[in-house]
Amino acid sequence: MNTIVFITGSTSGIGEACAYKFAAEGARLILNGRDTGKLKALQQSLQMQYGTESLLLPFDVRDRQAAGKAITGLNAGWQAVDILINNAGLVLGVDKEFEGNPDEWDIVIDTNIKGLLTITRLVVPLMLKQQRGHIINIGSIAGDAAYAGGSVYCATKAAVKALSDGLRIDLVDTPLRVTNIKPGMVKTHFSITRYRGDKTKADAVYRGLKPLTGADIAETIYFVASVPEHIQIAEVLVMPTQQATGTIVHHAL
Ligand code: 8X3
Image 1: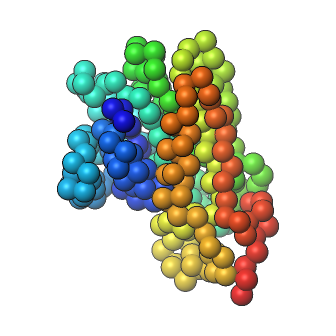
Image 2 (image 1 turned 90 degrees about the vertical axis):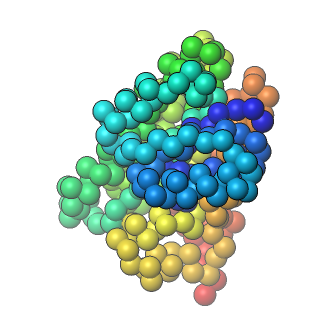
Image 3 (image 1 turned 180 degrees about the vertical axis):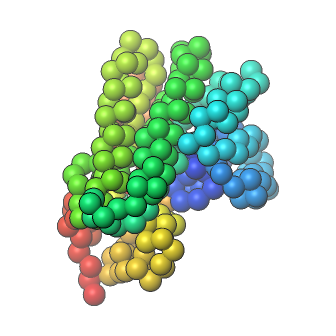
């Protein structure tokens, strides 16, 4: 696989699992994340395990200036991005809409919506130059319907669906493809962040069922990216067998 894969939020969860999966398949990687130390450790580990060539772009996707500087500064060799995985995203808290913390809303909305848009805005023109590319957005089952304590997060993932659909429309006369991956319950650091560091509450979410792993989603993403170029998988909704909707989950306790 002689491709360049650009992954935002690559130092944990689904992003990190994608880095390992695409590295195992021989891709070159552009790894974005906020934590330079973690990025360097990831780079080293991929290099040792798979001999992967990677480029580190340490910035917060909310920082439009830093993103612009990093991406417009890519040298010609790294500009030929084949696959963009817009993965950086988070949720903070499980508050009711009328009780939430507005500063946390800003972080979640600015990362999940505006960060994704910023990277798309910067990378898609590079793909258009080479008339090749695949934008894979990490949406969520949470974007299909709101659930208790999730209203802002659900709204951001509904936005990811609209942005994916809109981009697919805008690119319909090009060879570029757009996919919205919509995971259900995936056991990563995600729930710990949601419960603001409370691991007991986070673990309770997955009690009595086998949740998906980041690697499960990475396998799905790899499949979506590997189908012949005339096939555009627009959306994938993927959840554990014991989950049926964003709210109906069977915990065998
Ligand atoms: C997160 C999945 O199940 O917490 O995107 O809504 S869930």
